[in-house]
Image (tube, helix red, strand yellow):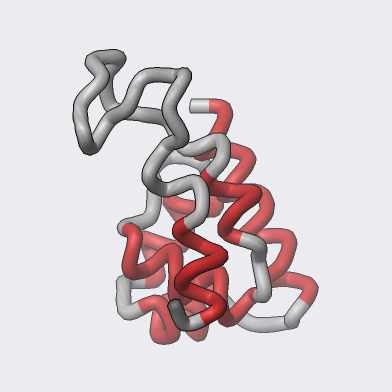
Amino acid sequence: MKVVKELGKKIKEMRIKKKISQKTLSQIAGCKRSNIANIEGGRVYPSMPSLIKIARFLEINLNEIMENWPNTDDTPTEDNPSEEEEHPHAKLGEQILSGR
Protein backbone atom coordinates (compact mmCIF):
# COMPACT_ATOMS: atom_id res chain seq x y z
CA MET A 1 0.00 0.00 0.00
CA LYS A 2 3.00 2.30 0.27
CA VAL A 3 3.03 2.92 -3.50
CA VAL A 4 -0.65 3.84 -3.67
CA LYS A 5 -0.26 6.28 -0.78
CA GLU A 6 2.80 7.90 -2.34
CA LEU A 7 1.02 8.14 -5.68
CA GLY A 8 -2.05 9.72 -4.08
CA LYS A 9 0.09 12.19 -2.16
CA LYS A 10 1.96 13.19 -5.34
CA ILE A 11 -1.28 13.66 -7.30
CA LYS A 12 -2.82 15.78 -4.54
CA GLU A 13 0.35 17.86 -4.18
CA MET A 14 0.49 18.58 -7.92
CA ARG A 15 -3.26 19.27 -8.17
CA ILE A 16 -3.05 21.83 -5.37
CA LYS A 17 0.05 23.37 -6.94
CA LYS A 18 -1.89 23.87 -10.17
CA LYS A 19 -4.80 25.30 -8.14
CA ILE A 20 -7.46 23.00 -9.52
CA SER A 21 -10.26 21.23 -7.68
CA GLN A 22 -10.83 17.52 -7.36
CA LYS A 23 -13.95 18.01 -9.48
CA THR A 24 -11.94 19.57 -12.31
CA LEU A 25 -9.33 16.82 -12.14
CA SER A 26 -12.09 14.20 -12.18
CA GLN A 27 -13.50 15.73 -15.36
CA ILE A 28 -10.05 15.62 -16.96
CA ALA A 29 -9.54 12.00 -15.85
CA GLY A 30 -13.05 10.93 -16.83
CA CYS A 31 -14.04 9.69 -13.40
CA LYS A 32 -16.06 10.77 -10.36
CA ARG A 33 -14.77 13.35 -7.88
CA SER A 34 -14.99 10.69 -5.16
CA ASN A 35 -12.54 8.55 -7.18
CA ILE A 36 -10.01 11.40 -7.11
CA ALA A 37 -10.53 11.75 -3.34
CA ASN A 38 -9.91 8.01 -2.91
CA ILE A 39 -6.83 8.10 -5.14
CA GLU A 40 -5.39 11.10 -3.30
CA GLY A 41 -6.19 9.45 0.03
CA GLY A 42 -4.18 6.40 -0.96
CA ARG A 43 -7.20 4.11 -0.74
CA VAL A 44 -7.33 2.98 -4.38
CA TYR A 45 -5.13 2.74 -7.46
CA PRO A 46 -6.33 4.80 -10.42
CA SER A 47 -7.20 2.94 -13.59
CA MET A 48 -4.43 3.09 -16.18
CA PRO A 49 -6.44 5.39 -18.53
CA SER A 50 -7.21 7.76 -15.63
CA LEU A 51 -3.62 7.67 -14.42
CA ILE A 52 -2.35 8.60 -17.89
CA LYS A 53 -4.76 11.54 -18.19
CA ILE A 54 -3.96 12.76 -14.66
CA ALA A 55 -0.21 12.43 -15.20
CA ARG A 56 -0.31 14.30 -18.50
CA PHE A 57 -2.35 17.14 -17.06
CA LEU A 58 -0.35 17.43 -13.84
CA GLU A 59 2.97 16.84 -15.63
CA ILE A 60 3.87 13.87 -13.42
CA ASN A 61 6.59 11.54 -14.71
CA LEU A 62 4.93 8.16 -15.16
CA ASN A 63 8.28 6.37 -15.30
CA GLU A 64 8.90 7.25 -11.65
CA ILE A 65 5.47 5.97 -10.70
CA MET A 66 5.54 2.80 -12.80
CA GLU A 67 8.96 1.65 -11.56
CA ASN A 68 7.37 1.08 -8.16
CA TRP A 69 4.00 -0.21 -9.40
CA PRO A 70 3.28 -3.51 -7.62
CA ASN A 71 2.64 -6.78 -9.40
CA THR A 72 -0.59 -8.50 -8.43
CA ASP A 73 1.15 -11.76 -7.59
CA ASP A 74 4.66 -13.20 -7.55
CA THR A 75 4.19 -15.73 -10.33
CA PRO A 76 6.31 -14.79 -13.33
CA THR A 77 4.16 -14.61 -16.45
CA GLU A 78 4.19 -12.52 -19.59
CA ASP A 79 2.01 -9.97 -17.81
CA ASN A 80 3.79 -10.36 -14.49
CA PRO A 81 7.54 -10.98 -15.00
CA SER A 82 9.99 -12.14 -12.39
CA GLU A 83 12.11 -9.55 -10.60
CA GLU A 84 15.01 -10.20 -12.97
CA GLU A 85 12.95 -9.12 -15.96
CA GLU A 86 11.92 -5.56 -16.64
CA HIS A 87 8.34 -4.89 -15.61
CA PRO A 88 6.21 -4.24 -18.74
CA HIS A 89 4.95 -0.96 -17.29
CA ALA A 90 8.41 0.40 -16.45
CA LYS A 91 8.75 2.36 -19.70
CA LEU A 92 5.03 2.84 -20.36
CA GLY A 93 4.92 6.46 -19.24
CA GLU A 94 7.84 7.45 -21.44
CA GLN A 95 6.26 5.78 -24.47
CA ILE A 96 2.83 7.33 -23.89
CA LEU A 97 4.12 10.82 -23.25
CA SER A 98 6.44 10.70 -26.26
CA GLY A 99 3.63 9.44 -28.50
CA ARG A 100 5.32 6.14 -29.40
